[in-house]
Image (cartoon, rainbow, N blue to C red; front, side, top):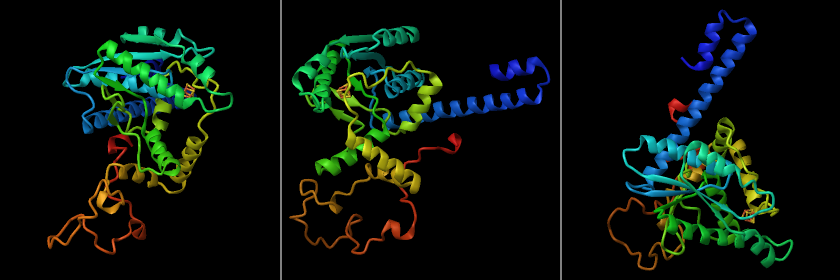
Length: 319
Ligand code: SF4
């Protein structure tokens, strides 16, 4: 029996007000437990699907103090307890010396939960302010500097994997940003080799919705550090894409899930990238091709049905 229920029963027959509060508390506890189970399942699934973590790995979890990186660390710690393999976790925060950065919060939190950690102090804030003219976007230089520092720290700590807290919504937004403003069909992969060729970067929250990390942060009461300390404006284009996806999700339930699913169901012969498919040498083979053009493919939207390959984000258990 959970503590809330036990305490309530010990008090004796509840009056109607306390009975209602008890029911409410039980419902909240049930929903929170379901959320935790869902996050563990989705993170475990992403780790398995992309072979993100292997026996003997040392995973460096990059902790910014935002809701997503806290959720990532928390869920990885739970999964490590249950995993049939052994891997180590070290949390790393880069203190960029932004004004009013509350430097005590992360060390206190990490000490309390008993996770080995390293705080890297590097004043990238001053560099960015010095180099970038007032009013220009600072994020690209800032992230380049941060990336270089984190790669070096990973080397120094002997980390074999670098885990970042990007989630499903970040990945979808990046996909549309690249398409709309970069003319590229390119997303944010769940696992990739770093640009210096020396590290493997993983995104275990790849299947997790932002709304879930948001709620989880509230449930767990993570000591969130505000993300606007650098004074940089939030990327306007990303903001617009976020709003577009939110609108779609409201108006056309299932559409965003289908788009996300399509990222893992790519048919190069039905696109136009000559580097991915050899259109030049395409010739009659006389053999049936499962991927071949059937001239008048049925349009999925014509039937009003959902594509069948949608990743199920909720099991019957979770609902
Ligand atoms: S928002 Fe601020 S801290 Fe984040 S990348 Fe941009 S400049 Fe750097």
